[in-house]
Length: 185
Picture (tube, rainbow, N blue to C red):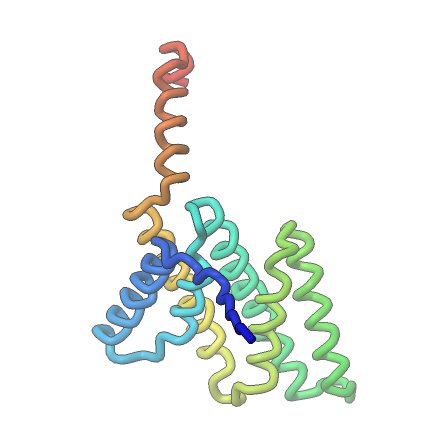
């Protein structure tokens, strides 16, 4: 009787992994130097902002940031309504109305992929943050996410993928081939 085991091929450890690690390390080091603030959401932003190539990072990181921004801006007034319950209305009515606003505002901006991160920040603030710090927490979360995304985009620009390098070469070649009057426009 002969047994044979076949293991699947291990995934390749490529530049995207190292660039993601570098962006997270950059964020953690910066936060450590700036007083040791918790870098959790900046690190999450850094992971979302790292794509296989520049445009993918901009799209994913941009969606994460836009969702966090819009969800954060909507949650501030609705947190107050939810916790204070003006007009005698149940808090859950304000909760659902705020979620409607989160979703609808994202749709107005055409940011369909930002709905999930917007809803995440909305619910995290609603259900886990205390009354005395919901505004400062929300603002910090928006800023942290943006910082993380920017760190990844910076790393991606410093260390472009082969696709980014080809895209840059193609764009430069097209610019050189363009008539001189088109380049001045």
